Length: 308
Image (cartoon, rainbow, N blue to C red):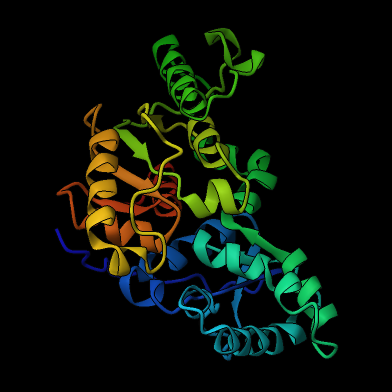
């Protein structure tokens, strides 16, 4: 099934004191415009405004993958120039909703370390760069009440459902279940919003490049999502930047294996964290594939009585 871009709902226009930059991206802005709009709405609920730097463009990853390294460094310098005035004015972070782009921008400091005009700025840009999951994790305590504010109690069955989801998420990453999550008596109390099973594909760039293995799964489980267990969750889906174009046969084999793993427990939809993976996975399944921040935005809308 080809990827068909879902229309983006309006972005918030609130001018919060807290501001973060967002890289719009070149591919994602066209193929999945709803992703960045969802991120802006979620952070708006937390009192954070996402700001677009008009002159920021491609992160340079595709050029770098294809050995056009000087072209890639040109993109890096242009982005740094676009972001720098906002950093000087107090922007807290540069937020990435595509983990492939995030991995690249995190490397700016290393890749421009030889350039006396940009080395220090590149280092600071890399330090400022955060995947959207890192931002949500830092604000998690303030976000949970926004999902649960309509009810302060839930049934034991609902609590057990949350525990089961957390367990599945942590089994998928090989981590241990925290003691506070083990029993229904200590489970988070949340409104009984109807749940569907979702499968999460963790991109290589997220779990291996950014070293954020298991973070999104744990976040989603804690916020009330029911996650399936995904076998071999550490393996690539076959997208891998330009790999799906340069090595189509191997890419398709990886894709078939990944789809089999993701659909093993019959989820209603597949969530991921990178536009390359999202578009690649969508070619091989009728299930909707979208960024996890869109699913969180939908859940918040349900909690506040609005149709996603």
